[in-house]
Image 1 (cartoon, rainbow, N blue to C red):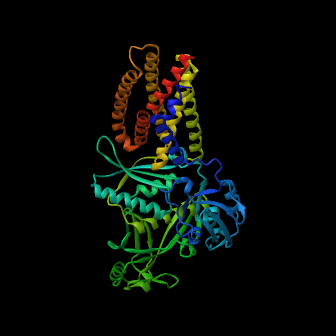
Image 2 (tube, helix red, strand yellow):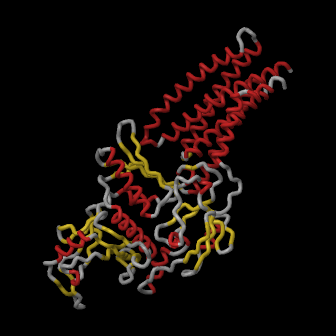
Length: 545
């Protein structure tokens, strides 16, 4: 024990202990979390109207608002939540208790249908999602999981032409606004550059539909409403208001849904409000148009209002004779959706409507973006990745321990090795939790690389310590100094090798590079010095005994 007492006074040992404790505090493990966490609150939904706010993606996972109780029934899992809300009656108050307050929601009623045949179409938007809440299992720690491990969609975009830094920032802000308007949260939008100097935009969205995101981001979003060849208004500044509530948007109450040649078709409609300048242009362009009448003697102007999205004709709307020469600011926009079944057509119509509403609000992007790559990972598959990654990490630690025991034939040598490997993993995860870095499969691989690099250094330290214990030719400090010269040379070589990976592959390997550098840096500066003191004390004690 005399050789172990100095460890309690050693600064390097205490430094390791302090960093491990700080890392555990940053990770903040929760073994039995209660409730389900909010991932998203849809704009203008029943939940938002009740006062529930969309979660801030920067909030630590364990600090996110969680639903604990609905109408006196405990909510512990996702299954509990959906069992309560899925078949809940419409137009009924619902009491929701969360970690941040108590809210009273009025469950929405399905949009009014024109006929019985439209009932199925209208129900396409009914159910639990009508509340406007998207939930997930309550986080067990502050470690943020990347899309590989939590599920979601990643899209890599490339500007069709070279853009300036200011334009790239403008595009990123526009994309963020589009995704927020569309009702998506937990969004990461960042720029990236590869080794060739090409600019990319990486969009990562947790729990989002891959096809919808591709459709929303793949288009420039250039919206124009024309009468003939003259533009009446454009998306963005010409639009002062776009209705997205059930009262003035949804499946068209007059047109509804009907059978088409190859399935079903449903029409949607929603109201918008034009700026005074756009309304004045409409008045000027309609002043000299001729009024014509249909069979029911309803009058409308000879030219329609043509709606174009990315230079493609979306719809043509008749202009009522009452609007001839008038500066009317309120306009009804309509379109359609198709599908094999009535419900599929209604869902397609609602999706098309939401895309059009988003473009009208945000305006067009300054340059067209090409989708270079898109990935979609289901939450179930991501959960499997987490379990497999954790199992792989544990197996790697045991494998390394077994090899060291076989090599030195001393079980006592394996103890500081295991402690050091676990400490390095905890410190890296604590750093990720503290800075909000997303841990993905590449980051898990980097942790394993850091552990492997650490084992190499530990073997060097063990060999040097054993030699100094058995031989008095050189002191332990001289041997350890020689070992650390090798360790630092290896560290700088590995860190330099990570620099190109920081930029390669549109930044997708950035997590691997950063995690590797953080892991080996923590090892060289924190765990290796403490390990050297541990191994010296244990081996001297073992030799004496």
